[in-house]
Each structure stands twice: as C-alpha cells, then as structure tokens.
Length: 635
Picture 1 (cartoon, rainbow, N blue to C red):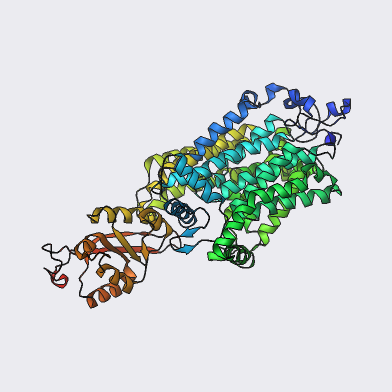
Picture 2 (picture 1 turned 90 degrees about the horizontal axis):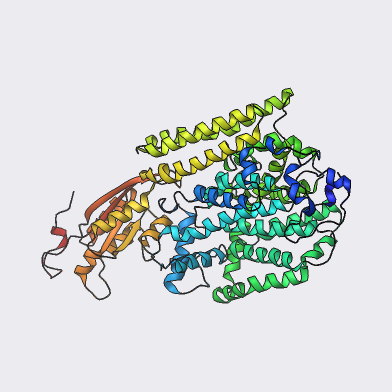
C-alpha cells in the first residue's frame, strides 16, 4: 500500500511530506492526506478509483461534512439518549450507590471521603462523584436533587463519546467514514444504557476515546518532535480516566501503546507524546485527591479499592457476575447491536487491509484489552464498551469501500443471511418481550411502547432486506432508526410502565401517604436495595426484625413519644413479619399495618411482599392515655 505515509492530520494542519502522484491515485482504507481532504469522499478507500457522489446514499451526500456531520450526530444522540432520563427510577444496584454517595457529599460538605450511609465506599476514585455534585450545584439543586440530575454527567459523557468517535475516525478517514462510525456508536444498545445510569462507565468511555484520538494523531505524525497540544490532551484524558475508574483507562491506552510499538518494532514515535511532561502532569491531576483520601482513611481506600474491588474481580466473579472466557464475544452480538451484522459483512475487507494504519491501530486498541477482559473472572456487559470505536471505524471504512455489496460466493451469501438475522432478530425479540414481559410480571403492556417498538422491528426487517439486496450503506439509516425507536419505546414507555419491578418508588410513596410527618423516620427489614435509601433518605435504617420492633417502640431523643409514634414507620418484608410482630409484642406493642407493597426484585428475581407498619396515635396528648396493646389493628 502506498498510502501508509499519508494519514490525515486535520487538527494539527500537517501531513506527511510525500505527496506523489501515486499517493494521489491510491488511498488505503480510512486514509487521506490533508491536501486530499477536499476530495476524500471521492475515494473508495482501497482501490483509489474515484467514486461518483451520485452513487452514495442521499444522507451521506447531505451530511458527510465536517460541519453537518457532528451536528447530525449530536441531534441523533440526544434523541436516543434522552428518553427515560426523567421517568425511569434509580436502577439497582450500582446507580443508586453512586448517586447516594454523591448525595451524601452534598449533605455533609465532605468532598474527599466517599460513603454510603455510614459505610465507607472505597471502590472507585472520586471523579464521578465530583461530576454528579457539580451537576446538582450547576442545576440549582441540593441533596434533594432527583435522579436525573445525577445522570447528567453520564448523558453528557455519552454525547461526547459520539463526537469523539467522529474525531478519532477523522485522524484516518474521510467525513463519510467518520459519520458512519459515529452513527454506530450512538445506536449501540450498551452506550444508550450507560448514558442513562449515574455511574462511572460513560465518563470512563469518553476519557478513553479522547486519549485514543490524541494518541492516534501522535502516532501518525511523520517525525519524532514533541506536539504539546496533542500530548496535553492525551495525558489530561488519562488523568481524568484515573480519577473516574482508577487503572482501567491507563490499561486500555497503555496496551494500545505497547501493541503499536510491537507492530511497528519501534518506540521512538512515543516521544511525540512528551512522556516526561505527561507523567508529571498526570501526577498533578490525580495525586492531590489520592493524597487527601490516603490521609483521611489511613490508607484503607487503597486496600479496599485495589486489594478487594480490583483484584477481587480479576480472581473471581464478584456479586454473582463470574463467567467463562468468550462470554464478552457472545454478549457483544446483543450489546453492540446493530453493529454486529455490518461487522460480519465487513470482516473480509478489513482482513484484506490488515496492514493499513487504520486497521493496525484499531487492532492494537481492540485485541489486547479484549483478551484481558475475557480473562478477568468478573464479567459485565459494559466492560468492553471502551473498545467499541476500535471496531466501528474499520467497519465504517469497509462499508464505504463496498463491503457487503458483492457477496457472490456461497460463503458470502451465507454470511449475508447470518447478518440479516443478527440485524432483525434482536428487534423482533424485544417486541415480543415488550408484550410478554409485562404479562409475566402482572402488568399491562404499554400501548405506545409496544407500537413504537413494533415500528422499530419493522425498520430492522427493512434494514435486513437492504443487506439481502447487497446495499448495506442503504441499510444504515433504517438500522439506526430502529435503534432510535427502541430507545424511545423501551426507555420512554415500556420500562417506566413495569410497575412491578419499581418497588422502591412505590414503597416511598406508600410511606409518604401513611405518615402525617413531612420527614418520617423509617427502618426496613428484608428490603435493603440502595434505590430505597436514595429515594427515602440517608437516615433510613436497614436492620433486622428485632431491631425494627425496638426502633418502632423508641421515642425521639427529646422524649416526645407521641411524635415518635406518628413519625416512625417500619417496612418489613413478609419473611420477617412474624418475628417482627413477636418482638413488638414483647415490647407491649401492636403495630398497625398501614399498607402493603408487592413486586419483583430485579436483582435475583425474588418476589417481594413488604408490610408497612406504624403505631396508633394516642387518644389524648398523654402518650400513656391508651395502652398500645389495647389499640385495634387496621386490616
């Protein structure tokens, strides 16, 4: 290939000095020099022959430009990521753990230590908590902020990921390739999920893609002099990644650097990243908080975060999330949807161009980290999400080159039919789940949600038909449109309508309706989900049935027993109710059943039946005027 020395470098305004006629005639996959940027869309990516713009889909001719493409991606990302941000309750368990810890920072004013109620939460660094606290303050909220406020950093990070994917792709490729890559990232199911969860992974993803975009441009430079702007972006992104999720960002990016050095058989190019300056700047970013948390916790943060959380996930599956190697490969067909169908059709073209700089870089990004994630015992679907751009950009370049439009052989036709199923079946399965899932739970399906997901399934089938007609580029709008409708239908309607699984919000509502106090004190036995703590309040007690009976009998510190009766409520899951009532009887109490909340715990699938208990009010102002054991119970 003759174009290996002519990568695009739009940001720095530089290009390789070689500008021969041969380079002008042939541009390898995903490559164009800065001088060729104006006609990069006319290159098919491999053969060097010009491509008539009339052969391109209308949407590509209209939007595949450096001004319009980012705007389209921003609008589409907002449409995909926004549904459900305000209407979906906190999703147990990780999301409310993070948001509750941020909430307690706002309550206490302590922005160094991380706590969940009175327990230290020393699992991840402070980055996402600071971002959530900033979101609350910038939107004018305090510790009572609703869950959507704590989700804002993840939403913003997911929007940035799509833009940064476009920016990364432009280091190698034309706007057409970059636009297709951005569309696939925005449409990926896992990105939409993480955009709606108030936790670390969307922010980590953004930091990694920013670092990779800067690193790619440094790697493509023609000389070994320092490039301060790109180096500053690279090391800043790494520092932010460390503050968000510790060693994950340095691992992914570091393995990319090592793999590139091995592939190139040289390491001198990394001098462009100014490593001495970079390490010092990285230390400036991360050390102040690490020193502060070490002092505040006497070093216990690192014992918990590294010794238990990180190394524990490597050696064994934590919290029931263990799985064998190759699990991520199997799960990818669902969480990266709709990309896998197009990736399958592009595989041959990508293999043929394996020596091109784009493929070499993406292999260095994707393969080493994927192997690590497969070998780690604990596996969750979002672990491989930071590798998604390394897959979508080569696929996008291959599709622009015509991959999937010339499947004439028997094997090619077989791959095409497999790709069609990979594209259509997930949407059809989700349509079935939007009908059958509520019926199984005892809820009514959401009519708007079912209709919208039905339309999504129709679009997915239409996209699959385009694959059968050997026009995969024409299938992209329908596939992305299907993902958009899935997001609107599920997150906007089907998910919020599943009342059976939203136990915490319904229990909090029952407490509010049962108590005459503005802020009742609540203790729970048998229902300990973090979402309940976040919604009900930090001082909610999670205790056993005996302790709960004692709690109900206790008075406030000022001795106002009558007030205590009105403002203390006990939530008791059915398996603990008998013991609770026995212990209450020993205290001379007959608790009043005020309400019952039933549902399904999505963590484990257990059925829940929670009784809400209080004490009857005294007849007069004297709390002893009516012995509580003589008070009739409510049915």
